Length: 110
Length: 124
Image 1 (spheres, rainbow over the protein chains, first blue to last red):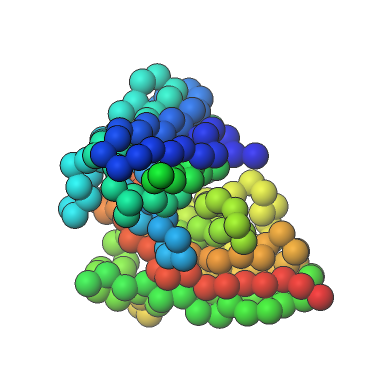
Image 2: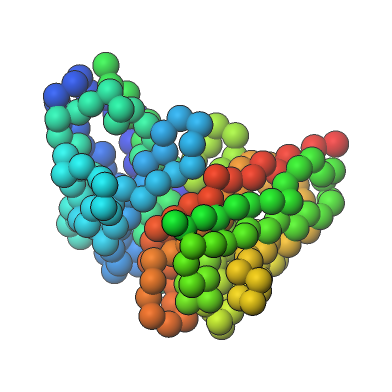
């Protein structure tokens, strides 16, 4: 059972906006920045969003991140078929001295 | 170009041992915190362990209970994971990952680069 909680699935049609949530606690999301990883089928994970709302070079601005208290969100606007992937949130936990991952959200583009 | 290449995976019996290696290139290996992350078949990502640039700080997932040991050789640009007393549930793909630059010995803020992963299968 993951300490960071994500919905197991999400879906949308091309062009829509979808949001994936990530819920934690005061010792992880509440104290540190949140990062998001995208894993396309059969490939290694890739950094999608860091420091809560920063996009690495090459990540489209359709992707955005935010945080409020002990929860974070990843938003994808103008959904495209190539966005179909698994998305994971992650954060450092000050109490456990561990990196915590969410359980992952499988995004389906209908 | 940052490259991380894992090796040493394979089939091992329960209770056995395996040593994974990660060969790094394309960056100043000795200045980055390095990490292992694993993924069981059909499951999500699970952080395993991290080691700071000078090996001063070493972190492990609580679930490993002392069975795994992370180490690095900065002269060889290599990261290692010694896995002992392996169990069925240790089966999965193990990824080597480089954290972002932090300027010192620090915890991994996020994983900026990932290797392609290596499969470890624990089965009798």
